Amino acid sequence: MTLPTTATTDLATTLNKQVIDRRRFLQHAILGSAVASSATLSLPIWAEEPEKQITNDPDTFPKNLPEAMRTAGAEFTNYGQPSPHEQHVIRWVSANSAALGTGVSWTPLHELQGTITPNGLHYERHHNGVPKIDPANHILLIDGLVKQPLKFSVKHLLRYPMISRTCFIECGGNSNSGWRNNPIQTKAGYAHGLISNCEWTGIPLKLLLQEAGVKSAAKWVIAEGADGSALNMSIPVEKLMDDAILALYQNGERIRPENGYPMRLVLPGWEGITNIKWLRQLKLTDAPTMSRDETSQYTELMPDGKARQFTFEMDAKSLITSPSLGMTLPDNPGVYQITGLAWSGRGKITKVEVSADGGKTWIDATLQGPILDKAFTRFSLPWHWKGDYAILQSRATDETGYVQPTRAALVESRGKHGFFHYNAIVSWEITEEGDINHVYE
Ligand SMILES: Nc1nc2c(c(=O)[nH]1)N[C@H]1C(S)=C(S)[C@@H](COP(=O)(O)O)O[C@H]1N2
Ligand SMILES: [Mo]
Image (cartoon, rainbow, N blue to C red; front, side, top):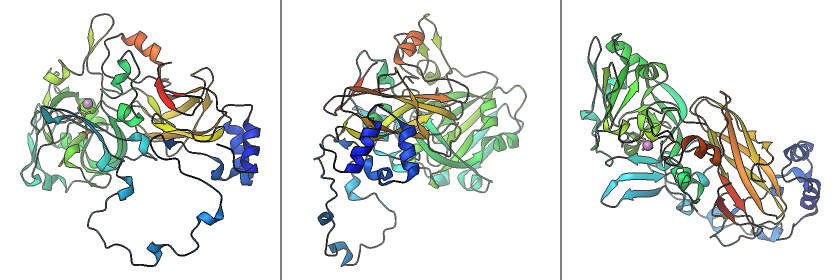
């Protein structure tokens, strides 16, 4: 494709010597010249879509009022739905064929912008399907090593003061295809989207535990869900007294059935499985219970032959969502907006670097604020693609100083039997034709 305007050509010439040059690009943007307009930034397009003609021809703007402006619009609806033109933006379901409610569904991170995951697209991980729960009959019991066992109905809980906090929940098994010998050719969200980021609203768990009176011998809590897997996990009391939330609302509305209606545990930054959905019991204990899902599962065989257990915090990670696999770069050469997400279970993201040469050189991306603790942070960086072979990567650093590892470093430290907690740098190969593949670098 040819570069359509003189302005774009000027910019391309200016940036010609560098693969990525944010400083110069921003200079143009600040100067406010015609070059700075967003029209000079191309976006990748989906490979399977017919190429759309983007042109400056004024005749493409309809001279007569379009039909929609000459008639009354559609009626009101009681609950809004996405545009019918967005029907391809869906979770991708990967379920057990013999037990259809068991498995996962992936958030299409590659189709989304900003940082908040819409409720209908929050990823799902069920161990035995979504239970049908009538909130009028649901009870949460707090018992075990407490001075006063307490029962709470939903109605009762809704009278408590609530707090809101935005954070991600990520499955420990997210991105685990990265442990395979060959890179899978799957869209970004369908390989890395067992993570979503919501505003959760509910009651600080500390408040309820204080009401029950935690005995000094109580060090752990076994939390259990009211689903057909009776999923239960041991959680240290300190986390529950720190920032845990008994959430009733998700992005402003009551939690969706698949995400834990009528209530779930939200443990910011901690492995998905500890965020027990459909929560029915918190039993305080002096030691971890060693339940099924914290012994036979969600543990990891390390190179020394021992298994590690209770790996609660999610390590810092990042992912370029655009350009990414399945998209194509139509303008060659062209200036593209690279964008993606970064997060850490240990605090805030402090830096995201982007490379176009497979990690030889790096440039800091712009972080979009507000940068929240244990939440998605969006990054972006304009990139001048000259039409040669490139490998795009992003690398996150969090406030503890932890830097996202390369795949080689991760495999080196964790061995060949990894299944959970895969957080290595993701590499997108850009071919000279502008196609995108997943590669290991
Ligand atoms: N009761 C119950 N809680 C559960 C699960 C479950 O199957 N049952 N799955 C866990 C796992 S492994 C993950 S990753 C998260 C998924 O939460 P989501 O489905 O809302 O995304 O919930 C956790 N809590
Ligand atoms: Mo999970």
